[in-house]
Every structure is written in C-alpha cells, then in structure tokens.
Image 1 (cartoon, rainbow, N blue to C red):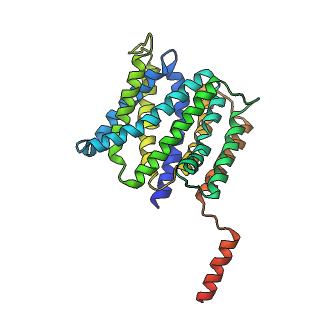
Image 2 (spheres, rainbow, N blue to C red):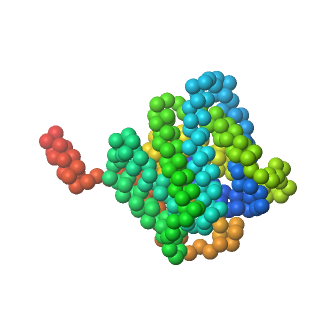
Image 3 (cartoon, rainbow, N blue to C red):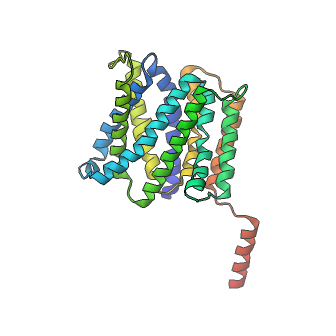
Length: 300
C-alpha cells in the first residue's frame, strides 16, 4: 500500500477518535474548567510522545524547538477559541462554523501565497461544507458570540494546517512534534493559572479517563499522524478528511450519550464521503483524455 493511501486511512481513523472524544470530553469536563482539561491532555500527550520519540528529544536544538513552538501557537489558539465557542452556542452550530476551515485554507493560500488550489479541491470543500450544513443546522443559522469565537478558531486552525504542510515539505517534521505539544502544555497551563477557582485535582474518575483517552488517541495519535501525513497529503485534503469528525461524533453521541441518529446525519455524512472521494480520486477531464489518446495514437 502506498504511504499516501495508508495515511489517508490512518487520518480517517483519527477523525473517529476525535468524534468519540467529543462525547468523552463532555462527560469528563463536567463542572471542571475546559482549559484545565486541555492542559492535562497536552501534558500527558507530551510525556507519552517524549518516550516514543526519545531519539529525537535527545537531539533537540534551538531551531527545532522554535519550529515546534511556532506550530503550537495557532494550534492552541484554534482549540482554545473553539472550546470557548462551544460554551456559548450549540454543539451543532459550533461544528458547522468550525468546518469553514476547509474553505479558509485554499482562500488563505490564494490571498497570502498566491497559490490556487485545483478546481476539484474547491468542489470538494464546498460539497463537504454542504454535508456539514445538513448535519449541523437544524432551524436557522445565526452569528453570535460563540460563532465568532469559533470562526477565529477555525482561522487559527487553518493557519496551523498550512504551516504543517510547509514545514513537512521543507524537511523532517517528526523532531518538532514533542516541542510542539510541550509548548501547547505550557500555554494551556498559563491559561489555567489565570482562571479563577481552579480545582487542580478533580475527584471524578471520568475526568481522568477522558484525559487518558484524549491525550493518547485524540492528541498524541491524531496530531502526530496528521503532521507526518501532510508530507504526502495537502492541507486542503487533510481539512476535508477532518470533516468526518462530526459524523463519527454523532454516532459516538448516540451510543455514549443516547442522542438520536437522524436522516440528516446519514445524508450529510454521505456528502462528506463524496467530498473526500472528489479530492482524492484522480479525475481526468474530457479534453485531457482526448489529448492522452491522441498522444498514444501518434506513438503507435
């Protein structure tokens, strides 16, 4: 199996972990502050990845640490702002607004880097957004405080994915993984220190189970696979694959939280799957096929 296809499968598996983590996090946080949850999540992920990538940790230098820290900033901002967003609006509304990352990436690349994405990426992005709209929007779309937080968070996450793509193509990005998560842990710790009435050692066992699951699967596994995968898969395609998350999340919520699986979920999930196919399959337009056939005929 080609590495590109392997990482595609691993990314989709990771979105399942992300989807499950929504329900797990909702149960784990309870009355505890979300920032504290993020802090412990990043701390445990950093410790686990330090063991896995110890050979890189031993060789850390200033340049690697600097790169990892620069990647951590938009990642933490994106996660933190979207966490704030979901506290001010519904989960479905937040998931739809967060999905605009898929369109932000080609737009940012076009405006800043003057690099236009292929037509099929634009088509896949908007198809995926329609699917996410079908899943998430129930009555009407309104822009509130939570939506604004989520929009800015989506922009930060788009910047993060573009940076990852750039760094992964410039060289080996694996050595930057541990510094990146360590910086995330430090930044969320600082945010937690500024929170009032923080209970540093929550008593509920669901909190710690959530930390373990999210640290190992949603953070250590998913972001590591994502970072390495972008050497083979573009940021636009990765962001479209990420839109499997709300589909898996809805199924997880059904089995864990008892929420209903609706026809909207099945229809929207189908559109997201179609978007992934559009972005991944090698499409050949009629004129390209004609040129290819003519060239082959001439050679014969």
